[in-house]
Length: 229
Image (cartoon, rainbow, N blue to C red; front, side, top):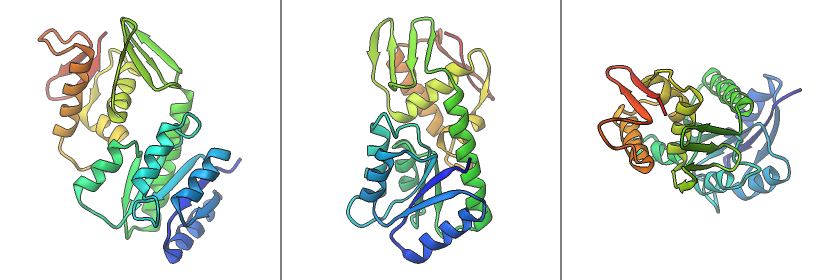
């Protein structure tokens, strides 16, 4: 069965190029000029992937992304942001708001197709994972997007949640920094590893794991991190 992809892009020429490109790979495409139209359609029937421009008339792409990730029905849908902006601040804003990848215009057809395939594979993998993971005192509910420690709720950002989820799914396995950056911030993310280290530090603080013992998230020097709870 063909994968359904939504494209939200207000520039007609770009929208048509993307649509024709993806249809040539046998994807089923629905295209929209505004975020409002895309959100309404996604609420009725969530697609397998959404490509969302940031600069849109009316609601912008970041606001739309946050709405998608706040709704139970559309939260699991992978989202690739499209934008002419190239600053790291804009990129990090999109990724920290829940985007799975980020493409700066102009982009090549083969690059677009590769990123779409990667996002779809990621979405399929996520769908196969268990909905609730409990390790020691920590419980992570994928469906509800909640985390608790010994029954008490722990408030996490989208990226902190994704980071903890990946670590817990790979308990006792060392995950290299590059792997975590690729999977959570986008496979071509060029930001320094301090972005990851900062998120690990805040995640540890929220889990009460900020002592020298590292009860839950263990640093493997020169490599990455592993969950040991």
